[in-house]
Amino acid sequence: MPLNNERMKLKVGLATLGCKVNQCDSAALARDLQSADFAIVPFTAFADAYIINTCTVTAFADFQARQLIRRARRANPRARIIVTGCYAQTQAQALAAIDGVTFVVGNDQKHQIPGLLSHEALDEQRIIASDIFLQKQFPSAPASSLAGRTRAFFKIQDGCNAFCSYCIVPFARGKSRSLPVSNVLIGVQDFLRQNFQEIVLTGIHLGNYGHDLQPPTNLARALETILAQNPTVRFRLSSIEPNEISDELLHLFGKYKNLCPHLHIPLQSGDNSILKMMKRHYDTSFYRALIEKVAKTVSDIAIGIDVMVGFPGEGEKEFDHTLKLLEELPAAYLHVFPYSERPGTAALAIQPKVPEKIKKERAAILRELGGKKRETFSLRFPGKTLPVLVEQTRDKKTGLPKGFSHNYLPVLLDKPPSSLVNTIVMARIEYYREGKLTGRVVHE
Image (cartoon, rainbow, N blue to C red; front, side):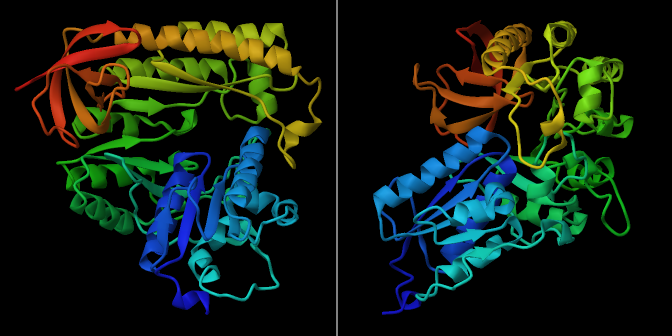
């Protein structure tokens, strides 16, 4: 019997690796599959088909994708396995050669996946992908929520024009493309109808939002329109490059209370020679001045910083420059990751390479510093009152309700009233203990 007559019974397991943009893509894909009468089941369950939405930022992400392929084959050797996402876009032939893989689907062809599952006969063309750099339009995927989330993640930009020497993302995602402001506003209303209290605006190169639109705009102008028209919901921004944080953007934090005081600003290295080899378009003096200005301009802002260790040519001196800079910056937390060679990137030719052992040692040093930064920032808030969005899950150790403040601090709520999930409450912070803030709900 043809599969398209069995679609009500067809079970699909969907796994996602990587960034919030990829998770947004998976949420949109899940919605398309459900609209086509497929049943979404946990990836660990028995299913008739498995879809793996991959990441390829690191070699470990590629490894994880191959692990998931093997796991799907073990769960049901007869299942169709579709591999999509960034690894599929950049290494389609290698993935298609893996036993059990039915289709490899590029990033700009994800919309075809429900159709591929609707036909019994296998198409001879097992790779469905095209030149991602020819993609000029923003994918028309609807705004979709991630299952079990109280915060909605809304992809409003895709692709990247930066071509940093270590990064494979432009080859996986293509050129920068933006969702028109009118469509963003429609998407926000969709989330509001689902009763979300916070929307995270995300993208691959979010600070480049709007440059490709006609007429051109920028993130700050689009964001002001969004904030002004939706005063009852709070908005958060995902990662933004340092040279794209303008005074115009910073001004919005003081003007609109529904813009969360939180910025994630990648550094990557605190050494100017390494930044130049990375093809980053700023130096450490610019970055230091920017972070200090952001901290001074926006009250209680949480500043997150990405930093890479082990880039080729990073000796003790270069690493010490990074460590010293980070020690002096008013950051709330650090995201630390070791350099991973990626095929086709310019950094492959740079010498000397840093041994894996040294990468791990340096990463451990910076992660320890990141823990101290997080504690220092958190200790500023006992005695203060913060708006906290209460999540569905409780703290595993204490069983207390938990949530995130507007400035991205995890807060446990002691002896709260009932039925607070997916509401923003005012919590007076009482103490910081074992890496967590605890507060009581107050009425103000």
